[in-house]
Length: 350
Image (cartoon, rainbow, N blue to C red):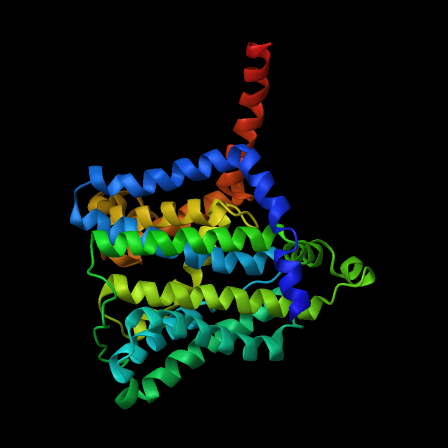
């Protein structure tokens, strides 16, 4: 354990110094400052509660999923850990009377413990075989929570104990957790531990040849990922002010995958960009339902014209287009633009 802690924080000072000297540090400060002052100018309760707050939560959730991809793994059932974190955090406060903030961390830790048990059994499986196992586990988890409805109350649902009121207080709380979580994930990815993850992803056989225990590091990545997924689940419950079995729904398993792929896999900024895009699309699609019906409807005449189905089709088509034309995500497009503009700036300065 001490070896892993040293591996995680051994290069902290060097990475911190590098971050301070890089252009990314300035961008990070600008992004955080913008996120802090934006609600002061956008005085719209709906946008704060239904768009800005979910963006922060899904940035954590997508970043949690992205840790798996960084270590060469994948999950199609992360909704299980989102749901476990959400339900445990709420039940601890409602049933045991503990402060909801403590319940938030208990939910994340419990989610990580379940992730540890799943990981011990399945971490040696290859990428998409592990994805199938996690998908099956998400179905099992939803079924178990429904079977113990008398104790859990998952079918009818119940309101959680709020840490802070919804709106501006909850937004700033989720922003704080998002910033801290993403910073931690950044230093994990840039540490020796992250280098081991990357080596396994790039070439597992060569990683083993240089002494990296692939199973151990995959397990660590899985546990870290499920911890942050559980944390996101607890925050998600706070943002909806109500929780039921829909927390385990299939779309919650595919959302972090789409966000990470659209933004850019194995990058720190990719899941954040993806979360902004997907949450924005989901929030604004209802306002353009008539346009979607006229454009998408004729292509799929057998599909119901009901809003949710048309919106899912629209998101699916957008996802396919991104995978075909920008397989490395929007981050790669931004990087290509930067490399083109940067030499022009140097030439102008010289």
